[in-house]
Length: 401
Image (cartoon, rainbow, N blue to C red; front, top):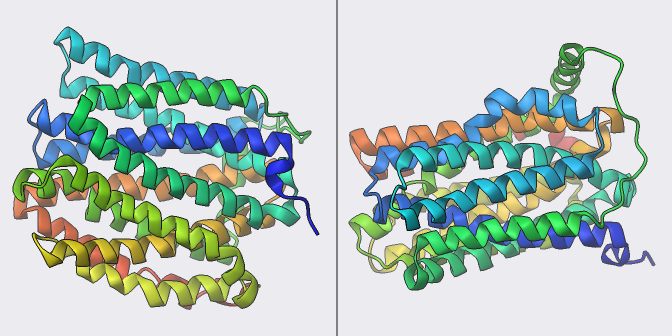
């Protein structure tokens, strides 16, 4: 019987660091747009742009970040990006208390936090195989994705209450402190031995990473499916503060609870992913689970007062369950088929497109909300999500063990 992964000191410390920072991140996920809406009077377009900027930084930094991570030790990079994000977020409550907070500052904070998150996540995903070994990647990712989903639930639920009781600036301060906590715990994570890429010019390394990804049909199918899902999610969620709080008049805690339902779904999906993958195989599991759950998204645009709120929340849970399963199985697959020296570049290339889709979804949500209303964005996101299983059906990924 294998020893539980959390008994390994290095992985345990990485897990704890991630748990605390993820909790804070989910608080800001709710608090920043609420701050924009309730304090600065932001409209749909401004909220959409705020959501998009945190991810569109990937378009500029994504590929160089991957090549850089493959050249350096990963733990110091993760600590530095935690400190960067903490400093950026601390500026928000300081500016609010000083009376000079503006949307421009929130946009700048979103860019800095997005850049830090990009580099941190690339380094973290490249670090995990060295800490646990490739044979235990699915178990490790199940724990990490489950932890992230659990923090989604706790953070988003806590955020709605915290914003209502203490105000959005205090909630953002809590996120900043969580990154400082994460940096402290990461100091205890050992740096596993790995081969660092230093010889070739960075441009050639970037090209090699892109070629590696796009020459593998399994990875391409996972990328296309993930890009569709990531485009759909912000279309279905970015304008929720405007709809739930601004138009329907629900209190802030309802928004936090609704978003937390998605975290609960992702937690359930990640908890069962290892079992489902072992029973069906990675490819068949991702295809069948996606086919069974993705169409539930068509209930989300009906979100309204009364029973429709519960129906939309249930659909959000089902769609997030699928995300939890895929995040465990497909991330593990990507790490298994990629050599150590290529992990940073493969991960960064994936994130360039996956997170770029999130940013584009945020921009589309803002534009559609301004032109045709909030529900037009929800409908587009629901339709894209409902069809996002198709790339797996017509690819070798469907039959991957």
